[in-house]
Amino acid sequence: MGKQYAALSEHTIKFISEQKLFFVGTATEDSRVNVSPKGMDTFRVLNNNQVIWLNVTGSGNETAAHIQKNSRMTVMFCAFDGPPLILRLYGNASVIHKNDPDWAELFAHFKPLPGARQIFDLTIDLVQTSCGMAVPYYAYTGDRELLTDWATKKGDEGLKLYWKEKNQASIDNIATHIIEKNL
Image (cartoon, rainbow, N blue to C red):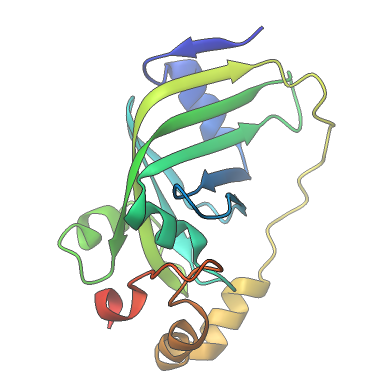
């Protein structure tokens, strides 16, 4: 049932391009494991062993905190329609903030989104597929615009204030470096 590969194939890249939702898992050696759902057309495949995803402002910033201490990341996609499939991408990631040298080049791959705060660059060292036969069918009816509307209403200065208040540390008090890297 499960198969492992060293890189993405044309089939898995096509599968990724059709998905509306993915999950990101990270942890440090001594932190809680964080699993976050992501959407909003924020995922790009750059090549068979490199993907990036745009992270927008949220209530926490666990992934950024974890990656700066331990670069391990797992990204998971599930087929909620069509043939069953679970696809996991394992590798090491780096976090790119707005003032980092790579930001402009990587950000150009995305449609600008209000509240964009980081880009994660994942170098894949293992691709794993599994059956997904127990994953239920779900129908995609559209994206929620609430986060985009909230970030637009906050504006740049409001978002920076929110980052200072809510996004500087993980729930385990690990620094995210969002303030010094983005202001």
